[in-house]
Amino acid sequence: MQTKSLSAALLFSVFLGPVGLLYASFWGGVFMILLGFFFVSAHFLFLASAVWVGSSIWAVRAIEMLHRKG
Image (cartoon, rainbow, N blue to C red):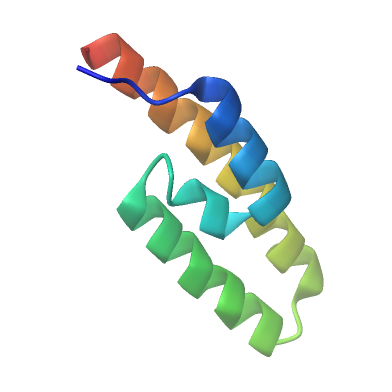
């Protein structure tokens, strides 16, 4: 079984934000993309940047949980 790389998930999510989260968690990435669109359209830019950071944390946690299961 091939596992996903923790460092790749972190790099994708740091540079691509919620789109990079799709590598680690598809539905998590979709959720964060939609949440980010909502915050940007409502001009809540601080919360939009929190979505970016949250995506990185979510990606790392998702890969850690995947490695524990496998």
